[in-house]
Structure formats: C-alpha cells, structure tokens
Length: 70
Image: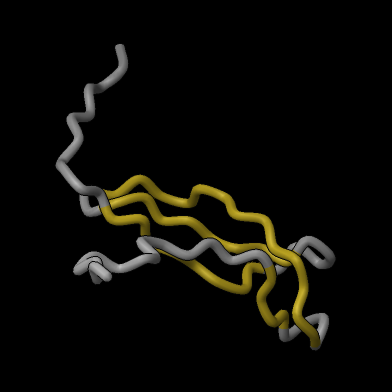
C-alpha cells in the first residue's frame, strides 16, 4: 500500500459557523472582501442575521498581474 505524502485535504470551506448574535451554529454565505497581493480575503456572513462571523484568506499559488482600468 502506497502512502501519499501530500495531504488529502488541500482546503476547507465553511458551511456553518457559530453566530454569537443568533447563539447557535448557522449556515453562512461567503463574500469576497478584498483582493490582496498575498491572496483573496473572504468574509463569512450568517444567512439569518447577516452579521460577519468569520474570515478566510485564499493564498495565491503564483503572483497575479493586475492591470489598471482606463
């Protein structure tokens, strides 16, 4: 039996998180907050009360080139 050296899980996505406002675990909606040089920052919002309850930074594998508009 071969054992893979690479992790089976590369990344996790939150489906529900604890909301202090609702006082229980609630489904969440992920929204893009910022596009940073080191990656994209997302915030997780409670689908019931719309309060922000978490954040995530998706790190880039390679640098991207951003061109200004206009």
